[in-house]
Picture (cartoon, one colour):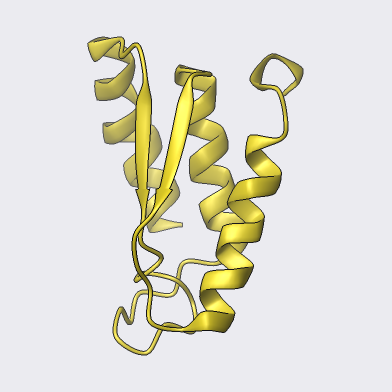
Length: 92
């Protein structure tokens, strides 16, 4: 819930105001639920929600995988983001 609040109240409005031509997501998944070092606990649904929100702002979005310390959490989170990227933003 904290991520949703911060995204909706702060990050997404700032990004909308900036009007980017491209959004690049650095998907480290260190904050994923099950990651032994991150300790934050974002679920795959949470990553999907954030990705969908960014794509609603700019459909030209790229994701770069760059880290994470749990292969299981990395796989679940990556799959959620990948499935979200397959959805066309205008269909949401």
